[in-house]
Image (cartoon, rainbow, N blue to C red; front, top):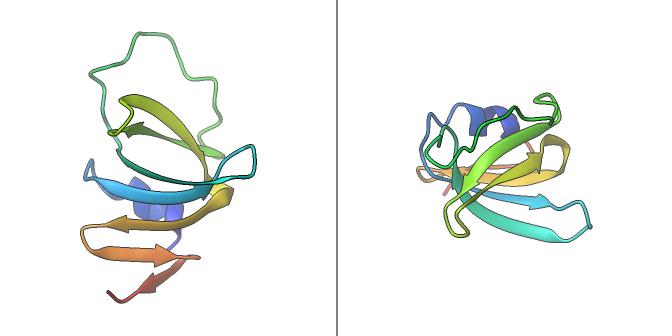
Length: 88
């Protein structure tokens, strides 16, 4: 399964994502999809084919993750690295 599809199928469960930021540094983020409590209105200008918006539970804000730079995703004990399921 592809890493971005794994995130989208998480159904609001907590996920840990390791990805490369725009400045080239690696980042590990714990977040969730579907959080709407902190929305302020307006529409997203990000292309959903390129980015996934997660709520960062540590920093308390929304973060955009580039689908092409995701290295690994972990959710409920299952880890996907480079689009391949890894056994725990």
